[in-house]
Amino acid sequence: MNHLGNTTAERVEAMMSDVKAWSRRLAQVCGVKTIEDFNRRVEDGTAADVIHVTEVLQARRIAAMADEIAQRGTVRTVLIAGPSSSGKTTFSKRLSIQLMAAGLKPVQLSTDDYFVNREQTPKDENGKYDFESLYAVDLDFLNDQLAQLTAGKQVELPRFNFETGLREFRGDTLTADHDTVIVIEGIHALNPLLTKCLREEAKYRIFCSVLSDVPLDGEHVVPAKDVRLLRRILRDSQYRGYPAEETIRRWPSVGRGEEKWIFPFMGEADTLFDSSFFYELAVMKGKLRPRLEGVGKDLPEYDKAQQLLTYLDGFTSIPDKAIPPTSLLREFFGGSSYKY
Image 1: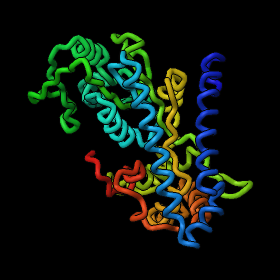
Image 2 (image 1 turned 60 degrees about the vertical axis):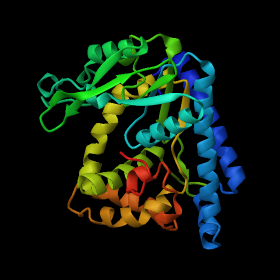
Image 3 (image 1 turned 90 degrees about the vertical axis):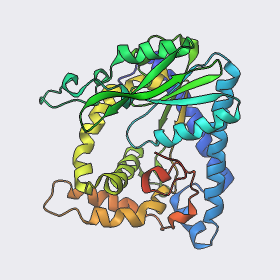
Image 4 (image 1 turned 135 degrees about the horizontal axis):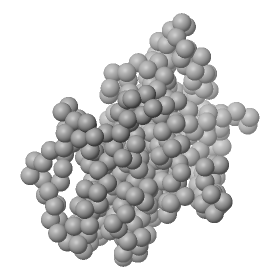
């Protein structure tokens, strides 16, 4: 992480050590260190136990964050950031449930609703709208509303109309009580400029991402970034109608935006949340394979599609019915009990 300063890099390294310790504990509890181990559990019919234990341990980790937020007593805003296909939306919903269980009143704000009007959106070096830019968000307006909310005042919330490219007001109002916690999820959530009006002790910051490579065997892994790409291919295909080659084509640009706008602020986080599941590609394999096989040999994205197919070959498929409706994985292939 050469884009981080030494002190920040050390902080990130320490938080990553905690993530790795959690992964080791999970492997120990489940008796699964590699996908080869998990495949054997599929074959002997005990894979469901591994899935259930993983979900429970992840829920406990989210509950611990909620308890820490409640115990601090000063937190008015929870900020959740992370790169594409990290599961931030479902994570924010699951955390909100745990915050309610801890006696708080979470309300969610979307930074998308604070976009500047389309004609004011910054443009990139190619003259195209740069929706990934921090300055695609109306920072002054967002901070003004956050300041009013944390002062106990009522605000009328905006709604951004993506068809017209304009901000609208539809009579939706919000007042924050003393036990209200505003949950903000978005790629810029950890950038200090996004919430410059708030005192530091009023913020709790979480960086959510796929932070662990998937060990196929003792020598080979599926890199975490490719796990996110596979998640995005499936989600783009199911919900946006994009073919796999289109998602693969856009992926380098997505990565450049993440390096510029997201990862430099990773060290601002109070904690990291690893949203990975070492068996997730076993669940998504059946849906992903035909999409990747549809990438033609004449396309520039063919080689990457073949590499991703090679990864999938290492997994024994399991049906998605094995995954509970509250799982973060449901964000990518459907069947979630949460509304999006």
